Image (cartoon, rainbow, N blue to C red; front, side, top):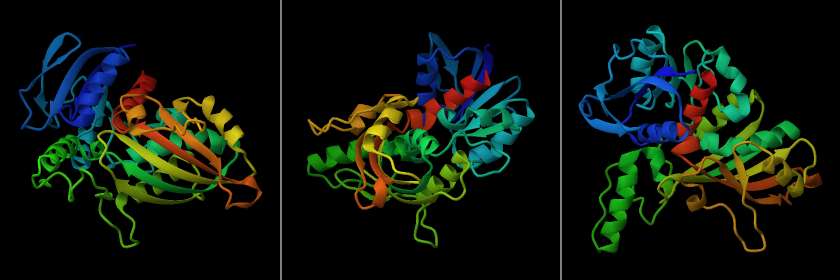
Length: 333
């Protein structure tokens, strides 16, 4: 079944990845609207052998649209997603605007695709660090409930948008040329450096990215009591996030059992070569759909073999954003 499709925020990093993912997966559509801010209106984009003109995103943009993929920022989602729903479209929103709304499904298809049918016009895409972290945790949690997660993230520049990716490249050139780097898209030098995630700090000392991981995981797992603590860091990598995840389980579990569960899990690839000290790296995950998992080992600080450490890498623009949204749209069809 084909649909009339719209993409809001098409000129951004995720918007461009929407187009690549739709083409690669041969997503069926009868018509396509490309929407962005007034600054980008009139721009020409070639897609699947046809040239499209970018239109300004307005509340009147969604007549006849069946599915609207949004990656235009939280403020624009709040402004325009309700108008899209009123016009008859189903919105798959990549921003944080609706994720914690109890009436909006927060969906990772490998985990809770059944929630899609409960939508009231809007389906939320989780945050990138949440998706990349919990796709491999879910099959383990199903087999042996996780009591506690300790997550440390190493997040790529792409999570802050195209401007941050370009800034990483330009700063690297400047530093190697002996020039002073310019910081505009990010608050601190990203090239050859790392720093606390650039989201706002709350009164508890945690940044917004860390609290998103806590609250979104609980909602997606439908497990409000799972204990989660996170530390999120920005690193000088273009587009793939890495995460160190420590899990405490209800019952004993071994690395071999974890490995077997992950090998069978959808959306996961195991790269766990101890002999050659070869585990997932950002360059492995960049441009790939799967979340890569390795460094699977017992947490020897926990009694009775109830602890496991894993290391994951996933493409922030793909499974962390565009791919997950397109998978939701495929389920809608």
